Structures are given as C-alpha cells and as structure tokens.
Length: 216
Image (cartoon, rainbow, N blue to C red; front, side, top):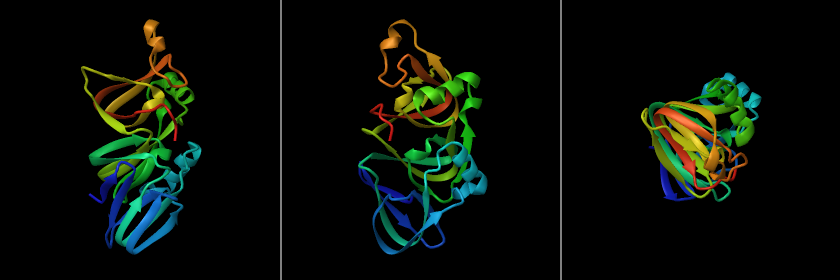
C-alpha cells in the first residue's frame, strides 16, 4: 500500500521507480527524495474520455502526476483523510473528495441519473453533488477527504442504508442508489439542504459517510 496515515489529516505516500500516483493539485505538503510533480491533463488513468466526462460533470478537479523515488506528505485544507483499499472493485466518489490515488487504478466517470432515473437526477440537485461521479477501479489505494472524519457502513441485500445526501462521501460494491422521500417524522431527520430526502443505497457493498453535512 503506497499510503500511510500519519494522523487524521495527513498521509505519507511512498513513490517508487516505475510507479506513479495521482494527487489533487496543491495537496503536496512536503517530500523527500527525487520526486517529480507534473500537471496531468489526461484525466488520470482513464485517459481523454475520463477528462471529458469530468469536464461535463463540472468535476474537473485538477490532478498532478507524482513519480520518482521518495516519500510525499499529502493533506488539504485541514480535512480529515480516509484511505480506502480496493481489491478489484469500483469506488464511486465525488471528484473534489479525491486527495490522492494509485496510478494503477482505472479512472472513469458515471452518470448517476442512470441509477434511479429521474430520482437519480433529482439527487444531484438536492445533494449539491454532480449528476456525474468519478469511478476508480482495480487494485490499489485511494485517499479521500471529508469533514469530521468518515465511517464505513456495510450495505447488505437484506438491509439497505439511508444516508443524508450531504453526508455521503463515496461507496463501493454492487450497489444501487436512489433518492427516497422522507415521510412523517422522517422529515425532521438529517440536516442537509434537502432533509426531506434521503439517499437510499441497496445491494452488497459499503458506503462512506462523513460526520458533517458540509461540502468541501
């Protein structure tokens, strides 16, 4: 694993010859060794199509390609950082949440409206998140940012998980999402911009939830 958690708001990445990492621009705090940082214009491992998808989504969070030999300290804005290890599955995450990730991961873009039809599109409006979301697939590690820390909540076929849309950070696994309307007393649940709505995730996997309703 290339990332080591130094504390809740900083990680150390090991960079080795022949390998590369991608990081959000401006996230480098310090480094040791012979390490180079190059602006990435190709949208990461996903190439030009990934870049086009991110532009269409309004999620063109600028990336740096990190290569060489040494160690790099990453952090950004004092946000809490969580390292997520992927073992062949796909992580769905908002682009501005990405701090750094393995260069071995394939990056893409997914139209979230395709999950839940019209309700999927409403989700983008209510949650303040884009209709598109970034996907990272393969074997490797991803460092994501959040307010107030992150907890991983399992999703099982027998028990879907309902999340305040503003508290959603990312999810992985064979998961479908839709926006559900809160009824009765549930109207009082959640503190996001649309507390009468909840993001319902069903299937098999996990969702990462932050301890805040603030956007980055």
